[in-house]
Length: 486
Image (cartoon, rainbow, N blue to C red; front, side, top):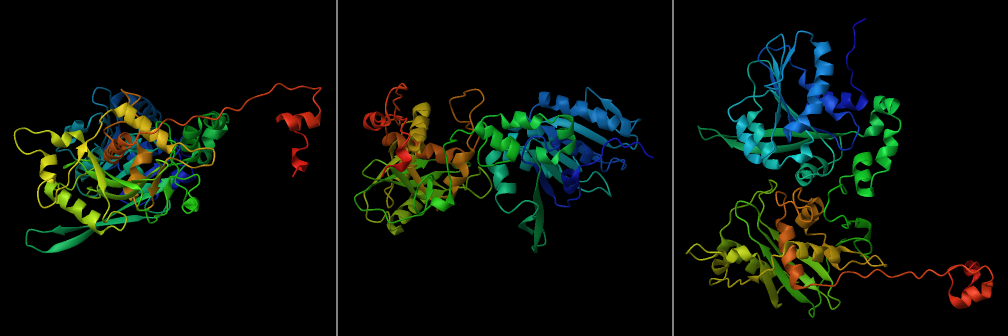
């Protein structure tokens, strides 16, 4: 009988049987993700010109992965050699598997001009979309007979959480192929529609029978984590995760109508007596964000309309001129029933008034015939973030000081995905898609509210001589007849 070095478990086998161009595996801790990546990279090492690439965000993160590769690769291919200085496995056939990192976005250029038949991203949510998508151009054959495809593993959380969720989790149910197409124009003028496929294969620690047999206490360690981290790592919950800035956020479609315990609600007609605000965060190569808010008589805020300048590719702007954006703002305000005829207070990104001798963006937007003027927003980042937290807090009845109409899809997508900056732990990581947050923050700073004051519960000492009647009269919490009183 052959000496079996490694064999896939059921969920790992599901992934390794997939044919799609891209696949994301995991979504929780302990699902055997790294082993699966190392094994998948071996699939074509019998082909001399095959080249594989396994990536982590930083080089120190590769250490454990390279150590594990020795445990699998060396006994499987005794004549294979690992070059520690170049971080590459050389196989007897001539095939190679490289280990690489992409700590900064500019590091993607280190792979320019190179070709890899297979590329794997370990912990994909640590990468930006620009880094992931750039490697598509490097995923090409080194010769005949190889298959070119991409695999990735991830847990919820991290700077890339939003785009990974949007690409693999949100579009459909797990294990169902997601298709996208692009129309390509050839030099002779004809066009063809080309298709690309991807899929999400979920896996949790419950699918890793070997781990649970070797370490049955691992389940308890995951269960003992703080709630957000536990939900993400133990159960694969993509709506809450460690490092999430606004973990107060709730989106419960069952309460869109009664507005209890949710920030997202069904749209409604805004009363004429409520004030209307418009916020702007400017962007050209990155998205710009414009949104309209209503403030009721209790100072509660409602996000009622948004205009987001994104191409559909995460964090990529539509490159519109300021006058065109101003024209669209004016059109929305003249057509939307909740905005038409209203006095609108506008506040914007202070950067739109910067000028190098030419007209500023703010001046261009204020030109005839649009006359869209913004006052300068308060750019205090920490105070602004706290105002957002104050508004997201629920009172004892499950009512927050901020609601978002269910039609504001980009707010609902990006705000829960924001993470903290690793070097400035009180602020948001600006490498993420934070344009909507900035625009919201400017409006919150123009309409500040006090932090919620928790109600004190007065604890009374227990008096064993106190009669049941005394307890009722004194309002003691030890009312043993409460269940029988009307």
